[in-house]
Image 1 (cartoon, rainbow, N blue to C red):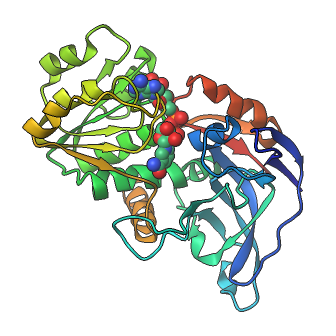
Image 2 (spheres, helix red, strand yellow):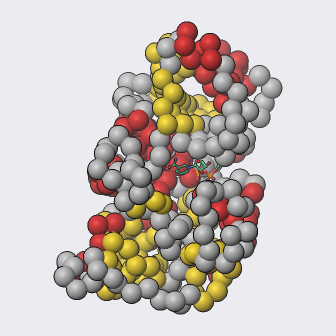
Length: 332
Ligand SMILES: NC(=O)c1ccc[n+]([C@@H]2O[C@H](COP(=O)([O-])OP(=O)(O)OC[C@H]3O[C@@H](n4cnc5c(N)ncnc54)[C@H](OP(=O)(O)O)[C@@H]3O)[C@@H](O)[C@H]2O)c1
């Protein structure tokens, strides 16, 4: 079969031939129809990810049709359209993942391929209201957004939230989820065009974080918030803390703008803020996320759909962040 394979630990990614997977015990083989790209795939090609191994097929998000189920597995999955839960071996605790936790697509072979073999417990039926491309864009970003907003962030319907870097895949679905929950959503972006799109999707206001003194202007225009959801970190992280009300929270799930932050500690202790981390989600978070998406008929924002064979160029284009929403790969 054809796949996007990391062929060297120096980050070389190639569209090449790979061995077809078989359904080992407790596994299913899925004929993939579409996959979606995450920032993680880009970091891996830049050597900026822990424990990189090669060769490995990348990709954490996928949708497809169940082709084979191992002996003794539930045959009712055969022929179903499924999305794949991308957290492997989360563990027993709802509080955090265990030692064996891995994300699909490194070191286990991922979804940028014509076929994949995954444990049967990773399968969920594709939400009926989603297209194949929307379903491919859902799992990792929506799982991360759901846990960060509602489990770690405890967002309440009467509250206000700032979602930073709204062009990101997690941020765009987080906007839709927070809006659907009844919260007031404000967003930030480097692009006025992306801010306008976010407002058309339910944000009540937006601020361009590249502008001079943007945080001060934000405060005078919008007042303090209950919660901030941030996947950027970097130099501007410290500017976020004064925007939170005393007793408020910031949930951090990524570091696109750089792993080191300035942290004005006085806002943290004086305003009794909670700084909370969030990563992916547990099996019950995934099931709850799917139910939430179905109940509110939410659709992930798709930036573009690109054939799998052009995936190497697509992933390298993530050095810039021109996208609004998810980059999807068409497979079959
Ligand atoms: N913890 C987890 O489980 C988990 C899961 C998924 C992703 N992540 C991490 O979360 C981050 C976002 O991932 P993603 O796939 O959703 O995003 P993405 O699609 O890669 O988009 C990144 C976005 O970051 C924004 N950005 C860049 N610099 C910024 C800054 N200084 N301030 C605010 N925003 C900034 C940009 O927003 P604008 O274009 O609007 O300016 C850009 O569109 C990545 O670091 C990723 O590795 C973590």
